[in-house]
Length: 290
Image 1 (cartoon, rainbow, N blue to C red):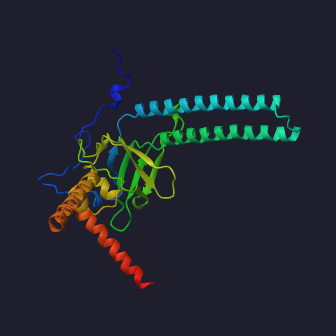
Image 2 (image 1 turned 90 degrees about the vertical axis):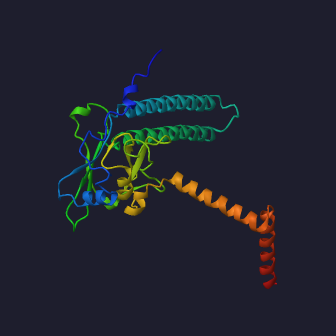
Protein backbone atom coordinates (compact mmCIF):
# COMPACT_ATOMS: atom_id res chain seq x y z
CA UNK A 1 0.00 0.00 0.00
CA UNK A 2 1.29 3.50 -0.77
CA UNK A 3 2.36 5.54 2.23
CA UNK A 4 2.15 9.26 2.82
CA UNK A 5 5.65 10.49 1.85
CA UNK A 6 5.75 13.07 4.67
CA UNK A 7 4.25 10.81 7.32
CA UNK A 8 7.34 11.11 9.51
CA UNK A 9 6.93 14.90 9.50
CA UNK A 10 3.68 14.59 11.45
CA UNK A 11 5.29 12.56 14.25
CA UNK A 12 6.78 14.07 17.40
CA UNK A 13 10.57 13.95 17.47
CA UNK A 14 11.20 16.03 20.60
CA UNK A 15 10.49 14.90 24.15
CA UNK A 16 10.40 16.95 27.38
CA UNK A 17 14.05 15.94 27.94
CA UNK A 18 15.22 17.31 24.58
CA UNK A 19 16.02 20.70 26.17
CA UNK A 20 16.48 21.74 29.81
CA UNK A 21 13.31 22.90 31.52
CA UNK A 22 11.88 22.67 35.05
CA UNK A 23 8.62 20.77 35.36
CA UNK A 24 5.82 20.84 37.90
CA UNK A 25 6.38 18.07 40.44
CA UNK A 26 6.78 17.29 44.14
CA UNK A 27 9.59 19.84 44.47
CA UNK A 28 8.25 22.42 42.01
CA UNK A 29 4.84 24.04 42.29
CA UNK A 30 3.31 25.85 39.34
CA UNK A 31 3.60 29.21 41.11
CA UNK A 32 7.30 28.57 41.75
CA UNK A 33 7.72 27.61 38.08
CA UNK A 34 6.35 31.00 36.99
CA UNK A 35 8.56 32.82 39.51
CA UNK A 36 11.59 30.90 38.19
CA UNK A 37 10.84 32.16 34.69
CA UNK A 38 10.21 35.80 35.56
CA UNK A 39 13.12 35.96 38.04
CA UNK A 40 15.61 34.52 35.55
CA UNK A 41 18.94 36.39 35.13
CA UNK A 42 18.56 39.53 32.99
CA UNK A 43 19.50 39.34 29.31
CA UNK A 44 19.94 35.56 29.41
CA UNK A 45 17.40 34.12 26.92
CA UNK A 46 15.45 31.08 28.10
CA UNK A 47 14.21 28.75 25.37
CA UNK A 48 10.43 28.89 25.69
CA UNK A 49 9.47 26.97 22.55
CA UNK A 50 11.00 25.09 19.64
CA UNK A 51 8.99 23.81 16.71
CA UNK A 52 9.13 20.44 15.04
CA UNK A 53 10.36 20.37 11.40
CA UNK A 54 7.90 22.44 9.37
CA UNK A 55 8.19 20.79 5.95
CA UNK A 56 4.61 19.52 6.17
CA UNK A 57 3.34 23.08 6.70
CA UNK A 58 5.35 24.27 3.70
CA UNK A 59 3.96 21.50 1.48
CA UNK A 60 0.39 22.36 2.53
CA UNK A 61 0.96 26.06 1.82
CA UNK A 62 2.48 25.26 -1.59
CA UNK A 63 -0.44 22.99 -2.51
CA UNK A 64 -3.04 25.59 -1.52
CA UNK A 65 -1.12 28.33 -3.36
CA UNK A 66 -0.88 26.29 -6.58
CA UNK A 67 -4.57 25.31 -6.36
CA UNK A 68 -5.71 28.91 -5.85
CA UNK A 69 -3.46 30.13 -8.68
CA UNK A 70 -4.74 27.53 -11.17
CA UNK A 71 -8.39 28.16 -10.32
CA UNK A 72 -7.93 31.95 -10.46
CA UNK A 73 -6.22 31.83 -13.87
CA UNK A 74 -8.84 29.42 -15.21
CA UNK A 75 -11.71 31.61 -13.99
CA UNK A 76 -9.99 34.73 -15.33
CA UNK A 77 -9.61 33.16 -18.76
CA UNK A 78 -13.27 32.09 -18.83
CA UNK A 79 -14.53 35.54 -17.81
CA UNK A 80 -12.27 37.32 -20.30
CA UNK A 81 -13.28 35.04 -23.20
CA UNK A 82 -16.95 35.48 -22.33
CA UNK A 83 -16.59 39.27 -22.11
CA UNK A 84 -14.75 39.47 -25.44
CA UNK A 85 -17.29 37.20 -27.19
CA UNK A 86 -20.24 39.24 -25.90
CA UNK A 87 -18.50 42.45 -26.96
CA UNK A 88 -17.77 41.20 -30.48
CA UNK A 89 -21.19 39.67 -31.18
CA UNK A 90 -23.18 42.51 -29.58
CA UNK A 91 -26.37 40.49 -29.96
CA UNK A 92 -28.46 43.23 -28.33
CA UNK A 93 -27.27 45.81 -30.91
CA UNK A 94 -26.05 48.16 -28.21
CA UNK A 95 -24.46 51.49 -29.16
CA UNK A 96 -20.68 51.41 -29.40
CA UNK A 97 -20.01 53.28 -26.14
CA UNK A 98 -22.62 51.26 -24.22
CA UNK A 99 -21.18 47.99 -25.51
CA UNK A 100 -17.64 49.14 -24.72
CA UNK A 101 -18.66 50.16 -21.20
CA UNK A 102 -20.12 46.70 -20.52
CA UNK A 103 -16.90 45.11 -21.78
CA UNK A 104 -14.88 47.33 -19.44
CA UNK A 105 -17.12 46.36 -16.50
CA UNK A 106 -16.71 42.65 -17.25
CA UNK A 107 -12.96 43.15 -17.51
CA UNK A 108 -13.06 44.93 -14.15
CA UNK A 109 -14.78 41.87 -12.67
CA UNK A 110 -11.92 39.83 -14.06
CA UNK A 111 -9.38 42.07 -12.36
CA UNK A 112 -11.36 41.79 -9.13
CA UNK A 113 -11.08 37.99 -9.23
CA UNK A 114 -7.34 38.28 -9.83
CA UNK A 115 -7.04 40.76 -6.96
CA UNK A 116 -8.80 38.43 -4.52
CA UNK A 117 -6.59 35.53 -5.60
CA UNK A 118 -3.45 37.67 -5.32
CA UNK A 119 -4.48 38.77 -1.82
CA UNK A 120 -5.05 35.17 -0.77
CA UNK A 121 -1.67 34.09 -2.17
CA UNK A 122 0.00 36.99 -0.35
CA UNK A 123 -1.64 35.86 2.89
CA UNK A 124 -0.29 32.33 2.33
CA UNK A 125 3.22 33.72 1.78
CA UNK A 126 2.87 35.77 4.96
CA UNK A 127 1.75 32.64 6.81
CA UNK A 128 5.12 31.06 6.01
CA UNK A 129 6.96 34.01 7.53
CA UNK A 130 4.75 33.89 10.65
CA UNK A 131 5.40 30.23 11.46
CA UNK A 132 7.34 30.30 14.73
CA UNK A 133 10.58 28.31 14.79
CA UNK A 134 11.89 29.26 18.23
CA UNK A 135 10.75 31.50 21.04
CA UNK A 136 12.87 32.80 23.93
CA UNK A 137 11.92 34.60 27.13
CA UNK A 138 14.36 37.42 27.89
CA UNK A 139 14.17 38.95 31.35
CA UNK A 140 15.41 42.53 31.70
CA UNK A 141 15.41 42.84 35.46
CA UNK A 142 12.66 43.66 37.93
CA UNK A 143 12.16 47.22 36.65
CA UNK A 144 11.79 46.51 32.91
CA UNK A 145 9.25 44.50 30.98
CA UNK A 146 10.41 41.09 29.66
CA UNK A 147 10.91 40.57 25.94
CA UNK A 148 9.79 37.62 23.84
CA UNK A 149 12.33 36.86 21.10
CA UNK A 150 10.68 35.05 18.18
CA UNK A 151 12.41 33.57 15.14
CA UNK A 152 10.38 32.61 12.07
CA UNK A 153 10.99 31.55 8.45
CA UNK A 154 12.09 33.70 5.49
CA UNK A 155 9.11 35.02 3.55
CA UNK A 156 10.34 33.82 0.15
CA UNK A 157 10.51 30.02 -0.24
CA UNK A 158 13.52 30.19 -2.58
CA UNK A 159 17.16 29.89 -1.56
CA UNK A 160 16.21 29.89 2.12
CA UNK A 161 19.70 28.88 3.30
CA UNK A 162 21.16 32.19 2.14
CA UNK A 163 18.33 34.32 3.53
CA UNK A 164 18.60 35.76 7.04
CA UNK A 165 16.26 34.27 9.64
CA UNK A 166 13.75 36.91 10.80
CA UNK A 167 14.04 37.60 14.54
CA UNK A 168 11.57 39.78 16.44
CA UNK A 169 12.08 41.23 19.93
CA UNK A 170 8.61 42.07 21.20
CA UNK A 171 7.52 43.35 24.64
CA UNK A 172 5.50 40.73 26.49
CA UNK A 173 2.47 43.03 26.88
CA UNK A 174 2.15 43.31 23.07
CA UNK A 175 1.57 39.56 22.61
CA UNK A 176 -1.74 37.90 23.45
CA UNK A 177 -3.87 34.92 22.54
CA UNK A 178 -7.08 35.48 20.61
CA UNK A 179 -10.42 35.64 22.38
CA UNK A 180 -11.24 32.38 24.22
CA UNK A 181 -7.99 30.79 22.98
CA UNK A 182 -5.90 28.75 25.42
CA UNK A 183 -2.75 26.68 25.19
CA UNK A 184 -3.59 24.19 27.93
CA UNK A 185 -5.75 21.22 26.91
CA UNK A 186 -4.41 18.63 29.35
CA UNK A 187 -3.32 16.31 26.53
CA UNK A 188 0.16 15.38 25.30
CA UNK A 189 3.62 15.86 26.82
CA UNK A 190 2.99 19.50 27.69
CA UNK A 191 -0.80 19.57 27.91
CA UNK A 192 -1.01 21.43 24.59
CA UNK A 193 -2.14 18.71 22.15
CA UNK A 194 -5.56 19.32 20.64
CA UNK A 195 -7.49 17.12 18.19
CA UNK A 196 -9.54 20.08 16.94
CA UNK A 197 -6.56 22.31 16.08
CA UNK A 198 -2.89 21.50 15.53
CA UNK A 199 -1.73 25.10 15.92
CA UNK A 200 -2.51 28.24 17.92
CA UNK A 201 -2.13 31.91 17.13
CA UNK A 202 -0.41 34.67 19.08
CA UNK A 203 -1.48 38.19 18.15
CA UNK A 204 0.93 41.11 18.21
CA UNK A 205 -0.41 44.56 18.98
CA UNK A 206 -0.62 46.69 15.84
CA UNK A 207 0.17 43.79 13.45
CA UNK A 208 -2.55 42.22 11.33
CA UNK A 209 -1.00 38.77 10.81
CA UNK A 210 -0.58 36.68 13.98
CA UNK A 211 2.29 34.33 14.79
CA UNK A 212 1.44 30.66 14.21
CA UNK A 213 2.66 28.14 16.79
CA UNK A 214 2.60 24.39 16.18
CA UNK A 215 1.10 22.63 19.20
CA UNK A 216 3.35 19.61 18.57
CA UNK A 217 6.54 21.52 19.38
CA UNK A 218 8.67 21.55 22.53
CA UNK A 219 7.43 23.77 25.39
CA UNK A 220 9.18 25.13 28.48
CA UNK A 221 7.24 23.95 31.53
CA UNK A 222 3.79 23.15 30.17
CA UNK A 223 0.88 24.82 28.38
CA UNK A 224 -0.35 26.56 31.53
CA UNK A 225 2.77 28.76 31.44
CA UNK A 226 1.62 30.07 28.06
CA UNK A 227 -1.85 30.78 29.45
CA UNK A 228 -0.18 33.02 32.05
CA UNK A 229 2.21 34.70 29.60
CA UNK A 230 -0.01 35.12 26.53
CA UNK A 231 -3.49 34.35 27.88
CA UNK A 232 -2.94 36.90 30.69
CA UNK A 233 -4.48 34.53 33.22
CA UNK A 234 -3.80 34.76 36.93
CA UNK A 235 -1.33 32.15 38.17
CA UNK A 236 -3.83 30.47 40.50
CA UNK A 237 -6.44 30.31 37.72
CA UNK A 238 -4.02 28.84 35.18
CA UNK A 239 -2.73 26.34 37.76
CA UNK A 240 -6.17 24.71 37.95
CA UNK A 241 -5.84 23.82 34.26
CA UNK A 242 -9.55 24.21 33.55
CA UNK A 243 -10.11 24.11 29.80
CA UNK A 244 -13.02 25.83 28.06
CA UNK A 245 -14.56 22.42 27.40
CA UNK A 246 -14.46 21.65 31.12
CA UNK A 247 -15.93 25.09 31.94
CA UNK A 248 -18.76 24.39 29.50
CA UNK A 249 -19.37 20.99 31.12
CA UNK A 250 -19.48 22.59 34.59
CA UNK A 251 -21.95 25.24 33.39
CA UNK A 252 -24.12 22.53 31.78
CA UNK A 253 -24.12 20.49 34.99
CA UNK A 254 -25.12 23.56 37.01
CA UNK A 255 -27.96 24.24 34.58
CA UNK A 256 -29.19 20.65 34.85
CA UNK A 257 -29.10 20.90 38.67
CA UNK A 258 -31.18 24.09 38.56
CA UNK A 259 -33.72 22.41 36.28
CA UNK A 260 -34.04 19.43 38.64
CA UNK A 261 -34.44 21.82 41.58
CA UNK A 262 -37.26 23.68 39.82
CA UNK A 263 -38.97 20.40 38.95
CA UNK A 264 -38.99 19.44 42.63
CA UNK A 265 -40.26 22.85 43.73
CA UNK A 266 -42.81 23.59 40.99
CA UNK A 267 -43.41 20.30 39.17
CA UNK A 268 -42.73 18.89 35.71
CA UNK A 269 -44.64 21.72 34.03
CA UNK A 270 -42.31 24.33 35.53
CA UNK A 271 -41.51 25.79 32.11
CA UNK A 272 -45.16 26.69 31.48
CA UNK A 273 -45.52 28.19 34.94
CA UNK A 274 -42.33 30.23 34.49
CA UNK A 275 -43.61 31.49 31.13
CA UNK A 276 -47.02 32.44 32.57
CA UNK A 277 -45.30 34.23 35.44
CA UNK A 278 -43.20 36.26 32.98
CA UNK A 279 -46.29 37.14 30.93
CA UNK A 280 -48.12 38.24 34.09
CA UNK A 281 -45.17 40.40 35.18
CA UNK A 282 -44.99 42.02 31.74
CA UNK A 283 -48.74 42.68 31.80
CA UNK A 284 -48.53 44.31 35.22
CA UNK A 285 -45.62 46.46 34.03
CA UNK A 286 -47.56 47.53 30.92
CA UNK A 287 -50.60 48.53 33.03
CA UNK A 288 -48.52 51.12 34.85
CA UNK A 289 -47.90 53.01 31.61
CA UNK A 290 -51.54 52.99 30.51
